[in-house]
Amino acid sequence: MTGQQTHGHPDAAQPRAVRRAAAQAERDRHAEGRRSRPLRIALFAVLALVIGGGAIGLVVSRLIGPAATDAAAIQVRASMGGFNPPALTVKAGQAVKVEFSSTDTSMHSDGGGWHQFAIDALGINWKVGPETTKVFEFTAPVTAGTYSWYCDICCGGKANPTMQGKLTVTT
Ligand SMILES: [Cu+2]
Image 1 (tube, rainbow, N blue to C red):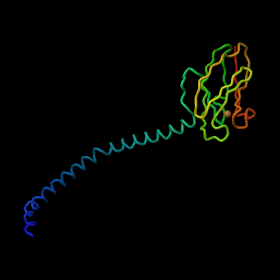
Image 2 (image 1 turned 45 degrees about the vertical axis):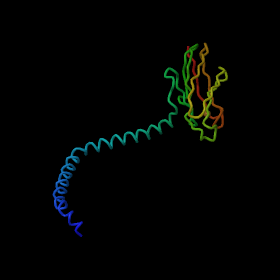
Image 3 (image 1 turned 90 degrees about the vertical axis):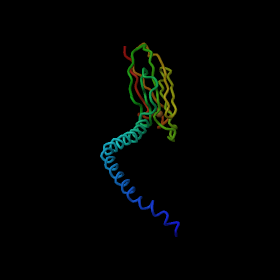
Image 4 (image 1 turned 120 degrees about the horizontal axis):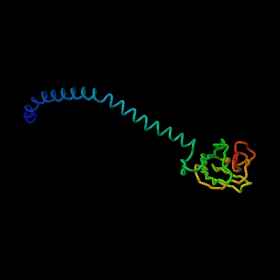
């Protein structure tokens, strides 16, 4: 019993200290509240941007496929939906660089995400795997004309109009 009473004296001083600390904490909280509201909004905006941007980026990357590795090359992207672009125009005799990509994933049961870019008359037969990009080169014929290209891997093969495109050679 006496042991507890010896603590009586420090205990008596504590409430004042506690009150002071509480008042200080209250003032701090007010100051904090005023300061951190715009800060919290900014933080939220940044978080929303990062998360939203990441999600959008993921969707976009799924739609447009792998990033181009050669900015100087003509970009041709293939998916089950078709070729993008579905037509190209080049100059006769021109050295042409094409970056060909597949935007489809390997989850596609029809072709496994592989696509082809073939022009029999020009000896072109390029293939790319799922979500893969590859740079190819060819020299355009010296005479003007139009050539059809096709993909015979997916979607019923080259008979499918979505798996076709047109190369126009101009003089
Ligand atoms: Cu295809």
